[in-house]
Image (cartoon, rainbow, N blue to C red):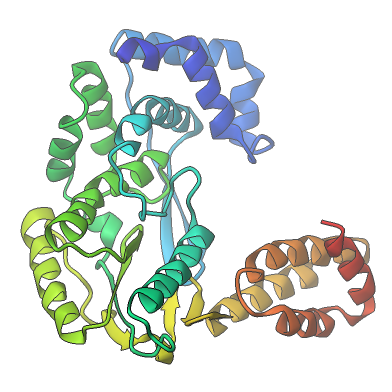
Length: 346
């Protein structure tokens, strides 16, 4: 396994993945200027056990909430990709179907689609007239990435990985950050799924919950019996604390009927209807306003057109066509016709 990890072809493929979408960043341009020498140095360090992880740099992202992102140097990001190329397929085989974050062929919109599918299945199996009697338990974990216990995580990894040299590299990456997992690392996404796979297994196999969806540290369970869901919540809370050293956020835990609308991954789901969350719309308005103010006249149309296409790919999963048309008319009436013609050709 370690020989495949250190292989020149694996390292080069990892380099291509690490630079994807960022190839004109200064750090990547500097690395790419002497690409052959730099990649050979990586291979040499790995094969001779001389690899040491670099220091992280931090930046803040204000999305649905304020997040501090820790990014590793580009050289280390190549090694993260090279490691995931080798070990991710091993763990992917054991992950449950309904875990949707940071996995190939999954993602946010697949999770929303599965949400609607579960509602339809429950309705048909129980001969319900509508979705109103279906309850949803919605939970998330307090400060998940910062709270991951690295000793527990490493023991979980060792169940699948036996190569001592690979385990040594994993330890270097885990110990490169003081507490928990840095959000910016590719390896952190995989490690986070490995850690919560224990929760997935417990809910699906021990508690026998058929209708369960997890997107990283957010998860939901469907049932017709409100009392049973509360009982399962108590068991899940104890399991998460005892086995994974984590805490479920009681303030964010909700158990409500679907008729009241369930806020999940930027949407609000009411049975067959999916609406955009107001906070999502506000963030979009704020972003496009900032771009508009900073752009010159020649750039404004291009900015609106690109943003519109991004928005279109997002809102098509919710019932927001008319709303989005009005939104863009307000933002750029002058260019509205051009934007719609441009976007509808996509």
